[in-house]
Length: 52
Image (tube, rainbow, N blue to C red; front, side, top):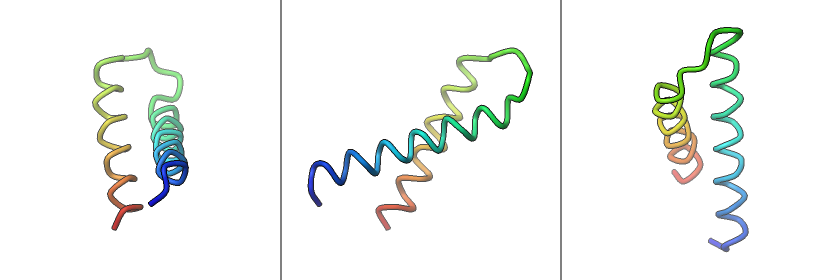
């Protein structure tokens, strides 16, 4: 797998996770630690789907 292709996959996964977190939060106050763990969980999930 090329380096640029890997970077693009990671970029898409992180953007998708960020958008999902924004949807889930809606207008509530930010909870940085909880959002960070959710971000890692979602990014990992999306990367696993892409790599398999």
